[in-house]
Length: 152
Length: 152
DNA sequence: CTAGATGCAAACGCTTTGCAAAGAT
DNA sequence: ATCTTTGCAAAGCGTTTGCATCTAG
Image 1 (cartoon, rainbow over the protein chains, first blue to last red):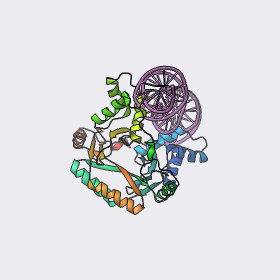
Image 2: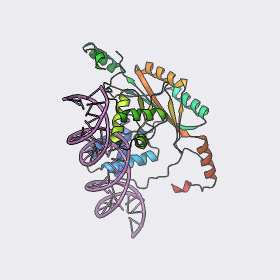
Image 3: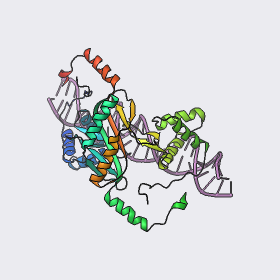
Image 4: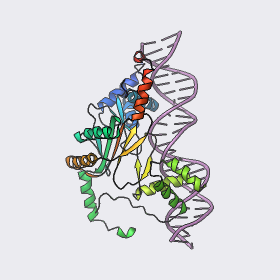
């Protein structure tokens, strides 16, 4: 038995809304949140309801068609299940999200799985930092700023 | 300038509630969520308010005393800032959380920082899978289960 | 004294749910 | 004809906020 398969929901009816939502998810490779997807869908089907979006996002997720991401503290993002697992680099200043893959991530999973005796199914790696542009912007702003040491 | 320091909030009053909350966070090394901390605090100070918990969790976080974790989809968990960065292994069945450290994680951060020209501040790695016990439990249950291939 | 912190209740934002109507098979 | 899915509105849940009161400094 494949221990990683637990979900039982199925796709019973092939509705227009469902097709549209999945299509939009596939076109928009990026990281959509529920509301962004809702707005996109409304452009083509103005009667689209937000709950339909939520219901289908959950369905797609249960079927393994998309994956849920935790890029910000506020709410979820979704993306179509990538063929190769990739991870995310998030800029703390501008919020830009860069996807990356790195063989070390795979190695890390293997290593940890063995060391802790876990059967690893997947990993989510979110690295935070500052991108080139924001580093530059902060340094520039810094020159025109007063020291704020006394604030403490 | 240290580009990683952005927050400006300070600790102005040394209140009982604040001391209590921080103490509880430190005693309870684990991963507390806001409500768990609230329940603990109420045992010692029955008038403690949930908003005070939230306000101080945020304060502690801004001061860098604790860190916010995203272990489940539902809500946040917090833990006192560890001396060495560690990551989490979460069992998909029983929810057990195991902390681990691995030199490959550090290496990965360095590598990605260079490759993408990011100044890395930190990383959150959450690996999911099945622990020893749950694997065993699933396999055992499996033997007494009917195949569910026809469900589709 | 007085600004900052608290407790309470109400508001908030994202997500889920109950229900009647519409739609797919 | 049946049973799923939809749209709508209302509820749910974790979290935040406004405000009067309290309190540490």
